[in-house]
Amino acid sequence: MNQNFKILIGFDGFVDSIYHPVEERKNVNDVLFFPSIQSFAQRLQKASNVSCNIELVLQEKRIGGNAPIMAKALLDMGAIINFIGTLGDPQIEPVFTELTSRCAHVTSLSSSGKSDVLEFQDGKIMLGHHDSILGLNQTILQEKMGPLLKILWAESDLVAMVNWTMFPNMNAIWRYLQTAYSPTDKLFFFDLADPSKRPLADLKEALQIIAGFNRSILSLNESEAAQIKALVGSDFPYNLGISELVIHSKTSALVYAEGSSFEVESELIQNPVRVTGVGDNFNAGYCLARLEKKGYIDSLLAGCLAARIYLTKT
Image (cartoon, rainbow, N blue to C red; front, side, top):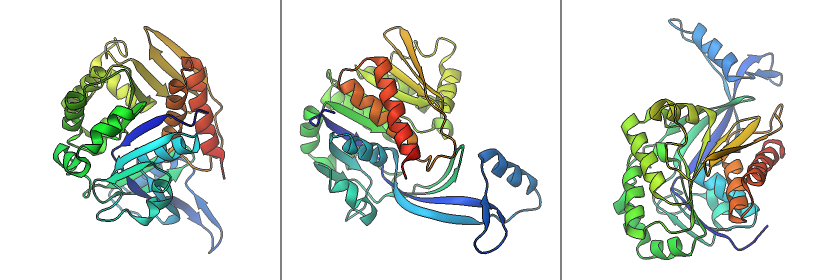
């Protein structure tokens, strides 16, 4: 792959503690984990009005957040990364050292967020601690970056702005960037990260802002796509005005672009090694393929390949 693409990515950063919830413990060493979110939900439902006790087994602590995971995947693919996020204050937190040592530039805007992630074979439940990142706004971005932001923006082949949901002020930040640096012919990538908890008016505004960036890519999973379709109506996705709208699932990926749709099937991975971050790896593969001017089908295949490698790599 081309080693010279420059990508500016922000603005989140989390430390993820990955847990497997215990369904049955027979002894110290013999334990069965809940295989699916549905099985876990059934246990919780039985606890209504009576309570329950769920044991969590810590698997690992690792970098989290859409921007760090996507940045790491892009670095592994040969891209040059300029990173702006929430990685620690006043110093970058140790868990991010391996990532930041490989980036061309890093600015941390605040302490990182924290997530307790319950992983299952069919997905994950993320329990977030967001106090340290909620106050991120345009003023902090300007104070921390100064004139360097304009330089990094101008030299980037792609600007990726992800995890909109976690930041209440992100619409204002996007509008500021859109106005101050005016969208150019570069690629802009967006990932909302499950907007279900945000007001619909905020989500509608976010979609309008994204459409204002020419050559914009919005990536969604099936749940996010259903939420947006319910918001904007049956003409979804063509009434969004977004250049490329990508929807990925466990068994397929498609993109709506240029008035048409393009779709590929992907292999369903049984018993994945990990699930947290698979969408970010898909996005990395798709974006880099688009930078390489690959067609929509080949770009979707590149995204699926990146996801499959991530799901199965030990």
